[in-house]
Image 1 (cartoon, rainbow, N blue to C red):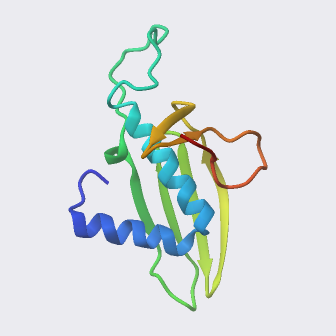
Image 2 (cartoon, rainbow, N blue to C red):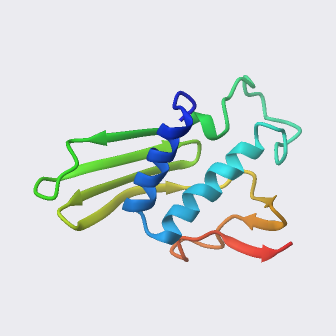
Length: 134
C-alpha cells in the first residue's frame, strides 16, 4: 500500500469495503491501525527476545492482489494482507467466499480517537474487534 498514491489507496480500500462485510472491513482497519502503532513504538515490548530488530510494520506494509479479471460470470479472487492479517475472498457472480483468514492484533490494545480498540476475546466471536469507551 505504501507504493500507492492517494487515489489508488482509496480505490484499494473501496474494493476491500465492497468484498467484505461491514464488520470484516472494520476488522481490517483495526488491525492495520494497531500495526501502525508499532511504527511509533506504542505497544512494543522492551525486549524483543533476540530478534534482529529490522522488522517493518505499519499501514504501508500491506499488499493487495487481484487474481483473474473482475467478472459477474467467472471466478476471481481478492487477496489482502500484511503483518497479522491475511484475507482471501473468492467471488463468483454475486456470491463470495472467504477462506484462510488470519487475523491478529499487536499491540493487544490501543487508543484511536478516544476509543480503545482491543484484541478479539475468543476465536469464533464477531468479526469486529472488541471496543470500549475511552
